[in-house]
Amino acid sequence: MYTSASSMMDACKEQNKKIYELQLQEEMEAEELSKEDVYEYLRKTYEIMKKSATAGLETPIMSMSGMTGKNAFKVNEYAESGNSVSGSLINKAMARALSTSEINASMGRIVAAPTAGASGILPATLVTMQEEFNHTDEEIFNALLTASAVGEIIAVNATISGAEGGCQAECGAAAAMAAAAIVELKGGSIEQIFTSASFALKNIMGLICDPVCGLVEYPCNLRNASGVVNAIISADLALAGVEALIPFDETVGAMGNVGKELPVALKETAIGGIAGTETAQRLYEEFLDK
Image (cartoon, rainbow, N blue to C red; front, top):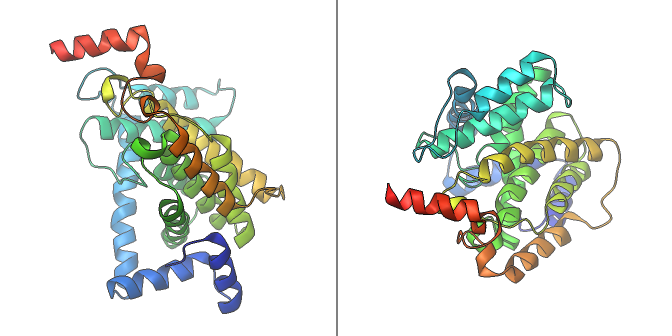
């Protein structure tokens, strides 16, 4: 296992391999699998991702609590209207992120990438990239391996848990993974992959976890939508040649430290932040009455 971006970059240069190739080798050795076995697993994973990212575009989906839902359908319709400010690609990506979030909140099948609360970001990114740029499934699978390498480093050196590090750890990690996947798909360098991931983390450093009624619905769904946009712009910044003043490994360490310093009320306890507002507390009382 590579526990830092610096060690992985060194290994890539020494072995003349890409990040996904190192990650593939690691998966094969750790689980005693063949290359075909790994890619078959990735194929099944991506199929689940695609279904969750598109289901809400075709049929309005409500959460089990009835508190949130139908937003993926609305944003998709808006994306197709030609009236959006940010354009079709961004709105389609947000709709797909919302769709997976809604599937999760309705107890449907999703891929926790890296968590259920942030499960919409990576699928929305990959599906959007494949649709817009005609990437092959194998290219998508390689991007998934690259994303997993980034997520693994974050998990080992900081956290991907909202209860431990706030939403910066969940949606931040997911956006970092998704940004890395985009750069891989666009043929960026190894340095640009980790630069994009560091930008995604920096962009939401300190973001709290404050789910209304303690449910992974709101504002989680909105943060999935903004998370995929974070991934896209972070990738573009890196691909444009913008350099990271603070490298990825140090950014991950900073995120971990910030998570430790966040008060308990702001780490998935549904006490502070949005969850502590008057309306949220009223919704909680109504939810208990049900």
